[in-house]
Length: 346
Ligand SMILES: Nc1ncnc2c1ncn2[C@@H]1O[C@H](COP(=O)(O)OP(=O)(O)OP(=O)(O)O)[C@@H](O)[C@H]1O
Image 1 (spheres, rainbow, N blue to C red):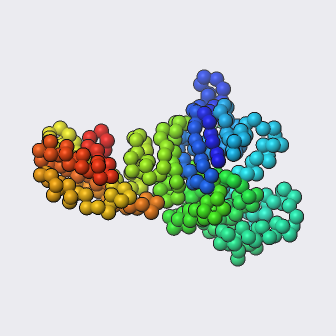
Image 2: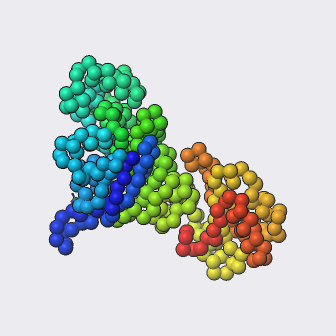
Image 3: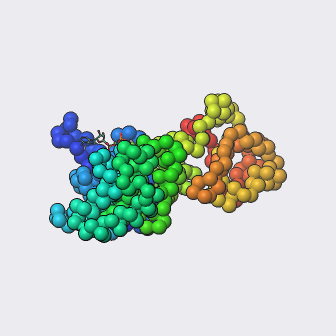
């Protein structure tokens, strides 16, 4: 388990030069979980991940791995603990003049592991990442996705408990990204390794993470399960990230309708979110039958999040106010989330 407790990082000194990159980060990543941290450029993501393996020493706070605070350790014990943390990078950081085999073997060679053990281990790791037939090739002979697989194999060489991924798929095309994310799921599921990843791509969070935290200006502004944050983002920044992948961008004509509606329409436009079981019930048609109101679906989509069906619709409600209120209560009681859409929330 990885815990960051009130982690601060200040770069530079003096009033004008001081940059507070992290302002009290609290995170808990459970064993065998993939936890994603998403944020815009400059939000503090790289600093955060570098503070986990003390590539960057936090100014204050605690970095606990399986209850051991890395900041209290002497250099020798810290080196030992850091072996439990593997890291992969956006630009792979492979040694160009060494073969794939040597790249993966490097952490073991540095540890003085016997040659036959290294051979067995590296062969196993290259087979795990699907590159058994490439061990004598050089990095330049591989595609980006294959290089990242080598990076993953190398990170796994020291049997880490935790794998840190620094924008691991940002340099890859969508198909290759999907294959690398599939491999990370395999790392979690078959090896039980805890994964902390930072990214600016919300599709990566949607496709592979169990939990997500949104970082803005050095502060975690929202965190929770991917399903919860995607279905009910609470902050403006989380909403904007979610919209980048759930195609919730509201077309201008609908925006105008919402704006007009909030000024003039006494009935209202509502966002209804269905998740899990509620996507399988004909809730809207039941509601229209049960209450004397008209429902007009004006925008929306139905998709899947981590294998769970998820729908997000904008629906205009027309009719008597009391009747609309009863319909809203009915929808709420049937496992869907319903909220009036104000022009501020679009
Ligand atoms: N070594 C450093 N010295 C001074 N300031 C730094 C240093 N490293 C980072 N910063 C500052 O800390 C803040 C957070 O930077 P960081 O690189 O962690 O953000 P990021 O979210 O990873 O951004 P990006 O996605 O662009 O890499 C920025 O204002 C950055 O300029």
